[in-house]
Image (tube, rainbow, N blue to C red; front, side, top):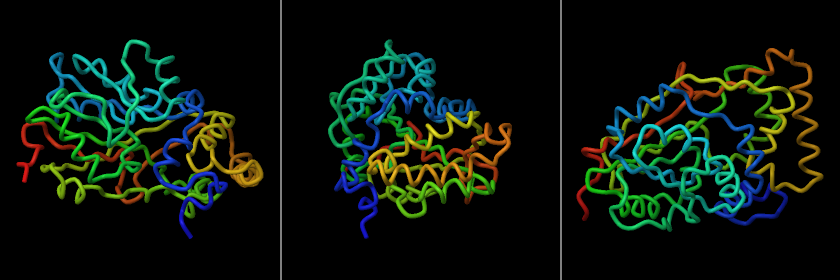
Length: 274
């Protein structure tokens, strides 16, 4: 069975799910986590970020990553295909330009940015075409930085929550997937993969809202979504409030790590065109 058949039969392709699955940008902005300071420092060091750098946040969503990277560069421009996400972005990050576009149609000139960042979105991309489009907008010596939040399923209740969310059945991507090979097969090289620890504090109510922002859940039929949330409640309600408020993210296969990077250093990230 195709993974999208679980989503209320309302989407037919991965790309469509990546847009329709995020139709409530305001809710997404309210409950999704930010990124750790160590991650931002890693990017700053890897790419030599300073006030002369122009950065692109591709698949910027509601602007969570943008708001953290903007103080590390001279200028940041954001691109996202979802109208709802762009609306939430404009409301929460009015000082940064947000443009309509996608991984394969970036509305920027050739060689117009020094670095491209993709936060919590690369798994939606048409990777070969997207890498060529990213290469097009990068200046010589430019780089690409990817980052994800991922649940720490070594925590028993978090693992139970993932099962209640039916993540094992309908996940739009495999948690912990290593994209290094795909990057190296394209125009990038010198790929480095790093993990960092982080935690997000949520109330029970905001945890429920966090679950509802999951792409495939948001496009389910009302009947399917209600049944799934009943299973989620069976996991969440027995928890002590203090425990529930710690919503931890990590890579299951990386000890002590909660963020996954595929970073291509600016000075040697672009392969010679064939």
